[in-house]
Image 1 (cartoon, one colour):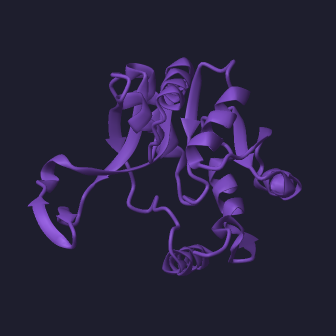
Image 2: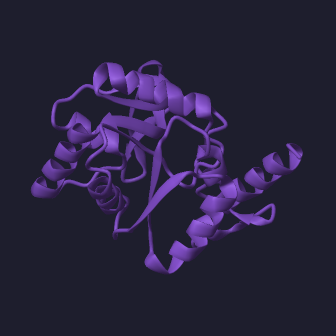
Length: 207
């Protein structure tokens, strides 16, 4: 977007404040937030306003993967962790519960929704293959894991110099299964300026 989208004004609050409100009262006992230190005071203020109970702040990293690893270090004593993108303000408590329950059965779980669009592989601006979308999902967060499993996955990725778009991929590459639960279309990730407009409209419609 060219700016820090998490602090974009959305109906009188920064975007991250709406995500914190969505997390409050969920199955999560402690919220660990990886963020630049200059933002910590603001995050603490919005966390209190959202009704977040126990909360910890850690320094963010250069990549999302580094930020998650920093947060994992702070949560190393917990048995289960749930990783969520702060740019998904419409996550529901029901979805968090489903992902955590699935992870408790298999060790790792992600939310996902069926791909509505046809997915094509391209090279040099030309289609090389069309994928069967019946076997494809678009993954979302939250993703939940047994903590020691996700720690092992991150350590292996760091050792091997591997970067991943999500934590489920890092777990997959060390050979552990990842369960899938039904995600929610409304749990979209704010990525483009248009997404902010949609978010504002949805929040305004709920007033």
